[in-house]
Amino acid sequence: MPGPFAGFKWLALVNDWSVFAEGFVQTILLSALGLTLALGLGIFFGLLGTSHVKLFKLLNRVYVEFIQNTPLVIQIFFLYHGLPHLGIMLPVFVVGVLGVGVYHGAYIAEVIRAGVESVPRGQLEAAYSQGFSYWGAMIHIVLPQAKRISYPPLTNQAVNLIKNTSVLAMVAGGELMYHADSWSSNNLYYGPSYVATGLLYLSLCFPLATFAKRMERKLEVSS
Amino acid sequence: MKKLYILILSLMMFIALAVSGCGSTTDSKPAAGGTGTAPEIKAIQDRGTLKVGVKVDVPKFGFKDPKTGQIDGFEIDLTRALAKKILGDEKKFEAQGVTAKTRGPLLDNGEVDLVIATFTITEERKQSYNFSDPYFTDGVALMVKKDSGITDLKGLADKTIGVAQSATSKKAIQEAADKEGIKVKFLEFGTYPEIKTALDSGRINCFSVDGAILYGYLDDTTVILNDRFTPQEYGVASKKANAGLAKTVNDTINDMKKSGELDKLMQKWGLK
Image (cartoon, rainbow over all chains, first blue to last red; front, side):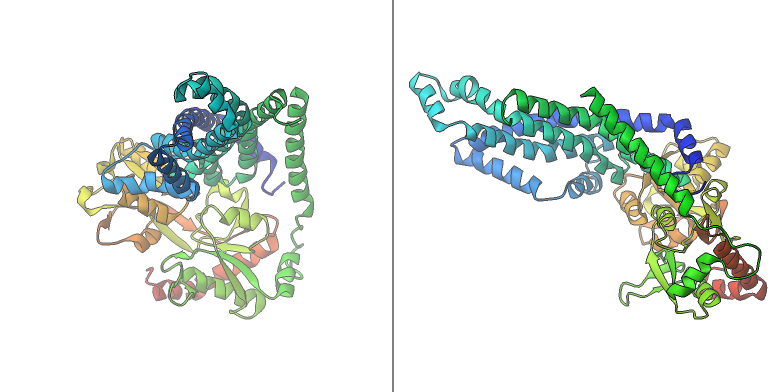
């Protein structure tokens, strides 16, 4: 039986499962580190965005607008092909963590800023009247409320981040998509390869998305 | 939640199987014997154009002139000869640019009838597609930066070699390296320009693909080494089910070999 989904192509896939496993592990590592970086950058720049200091606000805008309005592919290409011309040769794994981390950091910064700004101003003023400092009010009064609003969109960002690590396949990133491309293009058994790869991404993202939905319900953000 | 998860997984499996099932039933059967016209050839004649996947980034083989937008080369002339054979007019073909990665899928989904795009014949690939007898033989070559001082494969020990996805170069170089007793690393990229960019930026130490293709990327800073590895035989590929078309293509190519027409074409493009 010929065609892209022929039986012998599935058999070849099963025989070479370790190729996909290697990429899968790499994708998980990349996602975990990328997410940590994205969260760190996002919280930092998000809080800068809510500040009253003009310079902080400006920093937040420059970061968010610059990253959100250029494609991730271009950013990865710059890190991978561009920086070496300036004498900085980052290993491809670092390119990956930096790339998706900085990219999603910008989105997370917006999520955090929106979350904080959604807390009514009166809350902060009430906190001030009780003798809280700015940071005290932030940590004890505003952020706990902002957290509720921010959780579900944060989980969405995590899901997107996992999927976006696949962009690294374009620069020989060694993650799941690269291994799938590499394997399937050597033997041209692309049918089973991409179905299996899709399922592997699904197995990472679906539980996260489900978790987000459950949390939304629990936090009564949506009914 | 667990149930939903299992449901979705099984649904995806089902779709995959259904698609594969459809593939096998809709494939046309090859025409019986030599009498009459094979249905897939009839379909091409009814349509009036032969759809061919060609390279547009390999000078001398298939190259799209950025000034005129015209695609020309040795493989395009071969396409003309096949169009003449099947449709009686060498202009009745539609060329579509393909890469090493897209040529297989385009054949499978019927977007092109034939792929004539520096497609190396391998045993593994023969399981998926029909290949004609080889119309050209080339070797895998190595391109390095002039200032690297590398002169042969030995000089690439523990270095990184950039190859194209879907190319046979990786296997060929690996075998040669094993023979030499040296270790090399590989990085795979989707297109040739990406490999060249990686060579320029120093990500890789060597750009390796078939010699004829490599010459298209030669510039002042790079040099192509003299070594050639594992002969690469190029064939015209068609969908596995289109046996009638494969036979016509193969006959045409063998006729061109016998009549000396193929040699003439190679001379015309400076390939011999």
